[in-house]
Length: 421
Image 1 (cartoon, rainbow, N blue to C red):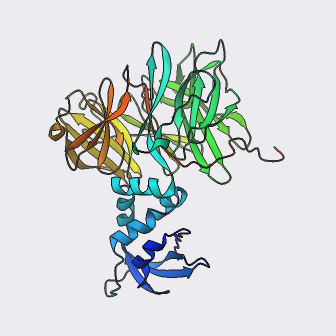
Image 2 (image 1 turned 90 degrees about the vertical axis):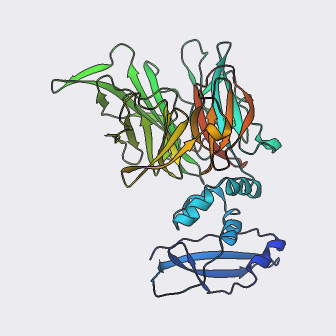
Image 3 (image 1 turned 180 degrees about the horizontal axis):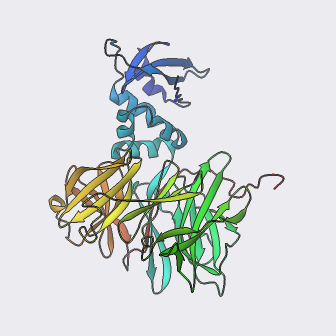
């Protein structure tokens, strides 16, 4: 039996009317699952509505279907930590939670913030600006001014944590982990600085108590090619920082890639289902599996595998799966990988919004809004309606890194060392 509980602790009284006709133990069809509603009356008069998935629906059974607007109202009050589990209930729930109207409502009702940190250079110094999806909210004006010195973002998580590095130390870089929404920061120990950093990624394994890991790929400053079984390979070292041990650990095995293959510049990693994905310079996908500390690569199907066929290609998180944005002329193709198989989902034209042909896709804000960029601006493009909106952030040079960001405003313990270590 596979069970999932969705609980609501704070339901406003004016919304109780939506649930008045629901009886405890009543069954509903949610997606393709038969669910039982459990209604519990709180002492203050509020109601808590939960669903437990019992078993798959049989075609002969006829159960009343829970209205989509009711599902919307329920899920928009679920905490960010539980939204991921709700998306596993059915495809309908998954689609609802990625819609722009849901993301806006969820942010308002759960006091969270969504957007992107844009990293660039101005007069030779790193500058980080935040582009919010929740523009009218005064809390959406986030910055990194609370961290000592100018820093560059090199990794981000879906739980509101950033990894930053001070590029202006005399010899050794300084690494910081921070939560911009609460202005918390902590300096972490340095990795092996005699190696040159190639790419970094950061994943949160547990939110309460907070447990995160940082994965750093680096290379020797003088030697980057090695010979193995008469074949030449590019090689990388891999180090992992564990917040519980508060220390770096270098993996024994080096990561080998085909010669002249390297991880793409500037594009942030895509984190999906416990694995980290990068697009290489020759249109291969490099994957690091966090649970086993192993790496794999795989080729893309035609035409994604063809170099310079699209300009540009962006590996993205698309509705909780690995996706690809591929621009050719004024059209943007949206691809998605399901069960290791790639398929084209749709083609989006930028002509209805009269955007410049030089605009390039960056990431999905939601299932219907795409973040676009040009030389100095970031653009919110609603490709369903054909409308576009300039962000309030002006960028002097083309971004060096764009990092999706989602966070609440709860304080966290950035340094929680496990005992007896």
